[in-house]
Image (cartoon, rainbow, N blue to C red; front, side, top):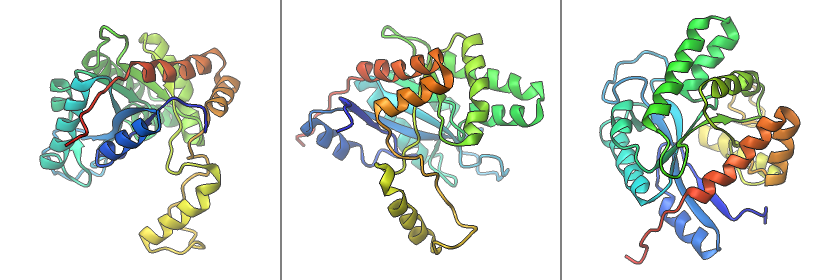
Length: 265
């Protein structure tokens, strides 16, 4: 209904819905893009030492470009539960380096390692945080090096909460200086704009809170699946040519993702 010919699901830390999603998308004539919003441990995934700093892992979007990428996603997700679970199912740099083939990585929203350092840079102006962000981007650029079909590491822009908006100029600057492509997306926790209240109620039920509790978790109203037109207007209005490029790259990535699974068993 929104005019898209492909769609991705990147659940937090798991692939549990992937096969059902794949079948239903295929049945509807929509290309399914298989992915995960992974949790990446700040160190060794097997280390359970509490530090209070992202112990549950940094967020990293991974999309399967081909069947090899899907196989690697399955391995990475399984190992996250088997050997990396601490607060969340976590992978780490060690297994990402060994199983990055066929995957496209997207990094930059507030839960990511890249954003973690840029938020600190924005708050303090300390160049050490900028240098750390550059190191993080360089590692991803190396591990997800361009392949035959193009770039495999994209710097991610979102534009629905002020904290993200504050670091977007830094993300754009870093991407330009390191010759990295930019892509935009919109965090989505419910499908339609008018479903925010239903989702809000669900969160209250799941956490045992009432709607009038001032201290409860509240999701922003902008976390719905925006149409291509809404996304393009928003990003071009805010970022001009960079916004247009970021939107164009969503289409380019979707065109590259071709996973064919056997679903008859």
